[in-house]
Image (cartoon, rainbow over all chains, first blue to last red; front, side):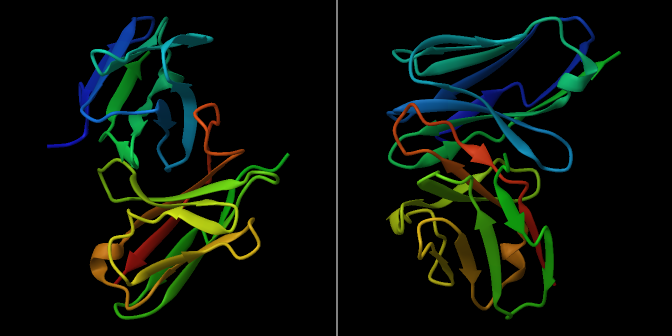
Length: 106
Length: 115
């Protein structure tokens, strides 16, 4: 069993749609990261959360420590949001989900 | 300012050879992390350094893998007797420290192909 599970694995949306990507984890953590990986491999750290909610532009990330669950929301999605979104947690070591591949169609 | 850089960007080697992968973190970042990402998978943690010392090397898959950071800045990941299964993108990240408030910044990765 993976320590970090993401859903969905693949997601296709029309431009402008509201998108939610979910992450559940099974270990005790001190922080959770949402990462964005574009084709070509470059990884950008979007958020680091230990509680509550963070917002940056059209991106919102929430975490519920009791439920061991986090969500990444994208409002008014755009084709340039197309990427793989990876959830990672820091417990005794770092654990990564396998990613959610998002494609936003114009 | 410069971000995290990694060299080479691509490395092709033959099975059994030795390779070194280099990571230049952001200046002033004391924490440095190595990950590898196989095709279609999420990144996998290998090792992290706080300063010059390896604070956690529990992710190194076996004793063919070794990493150093002798002066607390540049780090080298060394792989001996490479195997085809070592083929992956090796990612480096750095952060100001290892507390929960420190965000990691990722390099572009080194794509290693073992033939």
